[in-house]
Length: 241
Image 1 (cartoon, rainbow, N blue to C red):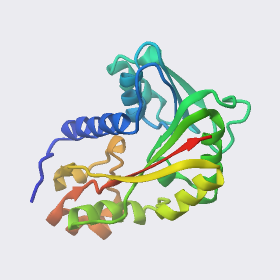
Image 2 (cartoon, rainbow, N blue to C red):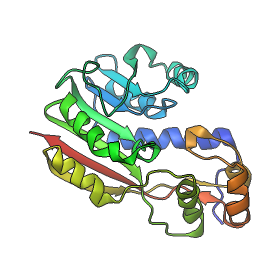
Image 3 (cartoon, rainbow, N blue to C red):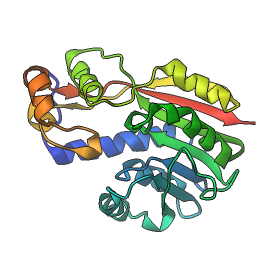
Image 4 (tube, rainbow, N blue to C red):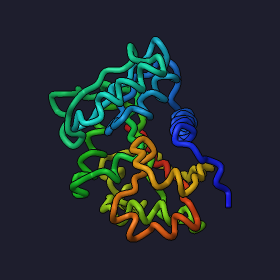
């Protein structure tokens, strides 16, 4: 077994480090204006802000304020609060909230899986395309359901059984094409975040891990035996012409 993460704090740091690598991978650079769709607790927002620097800005959008205290704590801890504006809004309807072509890039880190209404996915992609400038990019980073081992299978099952919206890649590509994006690319990004059963059996929202009664009933023994591991992530990107 490769249970190299045995402490929740270490898992949080690994998850934040992964987001930082991804932000660089998708082409975020200093001075950009970036919209972070479905910012949640702010882990990806903080990563984006570290890169765009003092001459850039991140607009962090979320439909809920449930995680606003955690969001504020994370951006303060990373020293990027002045670079971030939080906007409470529905990502499927940003009209009157964010203007046309207001940003250099619109991104979403595992936001689609959180959708309560999967039918809103194409509209969210359309709105992301609307708010970026010409030759700007939109990027969506989503969980791959292709588990390569039992630990990854446990993580995927955790989200499947929780009713998350795990879209097929073709569905996301089709939505990007409908939004008239060009140069669409799909890349897989490997991770090495393995965590032990002791960590997996905690409610760790920042790592999108939880262990409630249903998980204990359905996956408890498998987690004891194999732990859990982040599977690969899929990075979808396209350009607005």
